[in-house]
Image 1 (cartoon, rainbow, N blue to C red):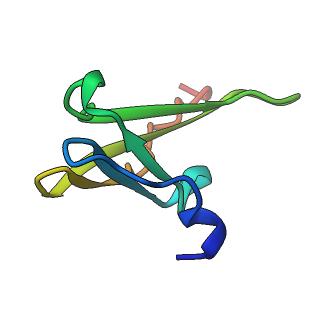
Image 2 (tube, rainbow, N blue to C red):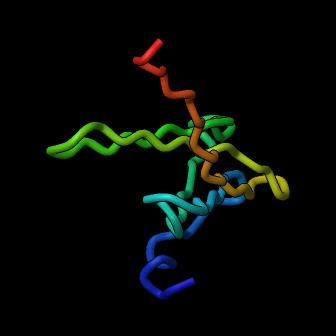
Length: 85
């Protein structure tokens, strides 16, 4: 982990430390204060820009009490409709 990522990551004893792996949030560390409750099982990140919106979903993998990893969910492959039929 870089020194920049470690800045401001002082967690209280009941706070959750969450690491994002993959996608645009790769390497991000989030401290979720205990007052916000348990970490969400899925986090959706939507990137808006000049083109179409890009959606990434991360699924929580709890490691120990108060520590977890959000792994990038693989993209869903949707069948392409054949216009010739």
